[in-house]
Length: 257
Image 1 (cartoon, one colour):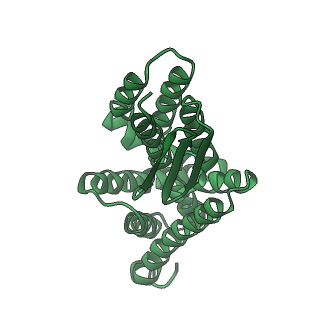
Image 2 (cartoon, helix red, strand yellow; image 1 turned 135 degrees about the vertical axis):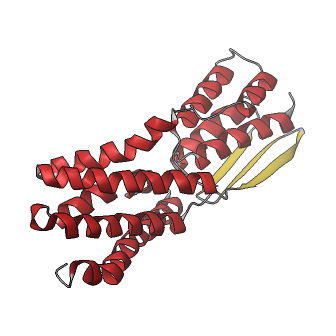
């Protein structure tokens, strides 16, 4: 067996899964199953949020060790599902090692129509506004704010902007548009309901869920790191809305915010 290719295959699978938002224990489990096909005595894997270390060795086999840093993270369930399927097929003997590696190299995110990607945040925002008991005017205001939010997110993706800068910018847009709509419709809308519903597409729900699951699995380093990441994202969202209210609220609404 080509142990170097086996290690490259396992590391590529783990890297793709971790970058796509998979839990730490899921990444370790997938890599462990792949590397165990070597039938070597030593298979060690350490996965944290920012890197992966793996090593295999045997009585007559020199240790093979790889370290992979993780610089970007997001949420892409389609990539995780494809990697899982390839891993299962290889471990089940349905495909050879080289074919598994080649298939992993060809894994791509499921393409969604740009119009669908544009309107999904809007639909989420409207749905939460309705669930929070918003009136018809609140829903109308959320539609306006949600359109602005989707536009900013689409523009940021085109420009390659992400991370905390994107969170602050999008939440600032939500706060500014909500203030403008409030100044037009006045008491017909509940500003709190509109803002809360509109920022829901930005809330790091998946990160918080993964943080809890990693912690329950005993991966305390990754769990704490994910919790901190989610906290910083939530703080950036709050900062963006707060700055919009502080800078434009009193001016646009005459101090009645």
